[in-house]
Image (cartoon, rainbow, N blue to C red):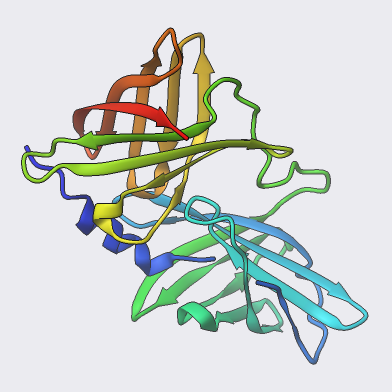
Length: 236
C-alpha cells in the first residue's frame, strides 16, 4: 500500500497560520486573552491560537498554529459589534467570523481561506494557564534524525529535528520530497528507550526504540490506518 504524503501536506496549506502584531485605531473591548481551538482538516487537526492584548496604543492581535509553525502573524480588522466578532489574517488570505458567547468565554465561528470554510471554535484560556509552548524536557534525544519511508514508490525522506531549550523539548518534522515545510510535534515522550511523538496536523505518529548507543531510532510511522517501518539515524 502506498502512502502519498504530498496530498496530505497540500491540504495543510489551507490553514497555515504563522512577525509582530498590528495595533488597531480603535480599542476592541472584551476580547483580551488567549483563545485556543482546533481546526479539523479531515486528515488531521491543527490548533489555532488567537492572542488579543489591549494597551495604550490600542488593541493588538496575532494568530498562530503551533502544530504547524512557532511563528505568529498579525491579525487586522478585528471588530466586535455586540457579540458578532470578525478579524482578518491578510498575509495568508484568511479571515474568521463568528460570535462571542454570552459568558464571554467562547468564540464560535468559521475560518475562511482560499474559499474554504472550516469551523474554528476557540475558548478563552483561564488566568494562570501554562504557556502554549510549555513542553516536557526529554533527555538524550536532541539531534537531527533522518530516515526513509518505503511507501511502495519512491522513498520518502523524513527528517525529525529534536531540540531542547528553556521551554522544553520540541520535535519538528520535515520531508524534503514534499516541499519546504515543517510541522511541530506534540506529546513527545520517552519511557526508557521507547520514544514517541505525534504530528496531529497530518494524523501521523512515530513510535520506536532508541538504540543502546543512542545512534538510531527503530520503529513505526503510523498515518491514516497505515503502519510503515521507519528507522531514523541521528546526525549532527
